[in-house]
Length: 122
Image (cartoon, rainbow, N blue to C red):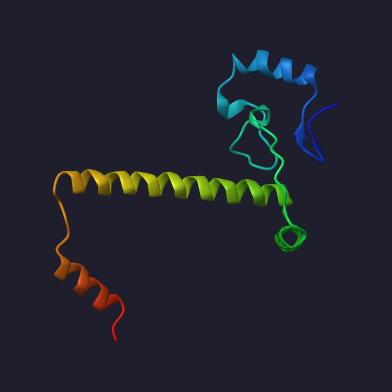
């Protein structure tokens, strides 16, 4: 059967998946079969998730995918990666700020006021 694009994502026959798993133990990640939607991921590493989209969002997604000549699934994967990366970064920054506050390292009120006035004059 081979790798294919189904309504629910990329699929691999059970036989191919078992053969891939057996060979994977002898291969580096760099030489494993690559996913056509996201070349950074080995094909068998995908998990399919159903995401309900309202018709307007689905239409926007389809339009954007067509304009870019890409699969809508690739755009969804990219959007999820960006959101997850951002959230991880944001939580690390919050943890840093809490640790600084716990050590008593605060920014002076006058410094904050000056920064705001510089960025938003008027």
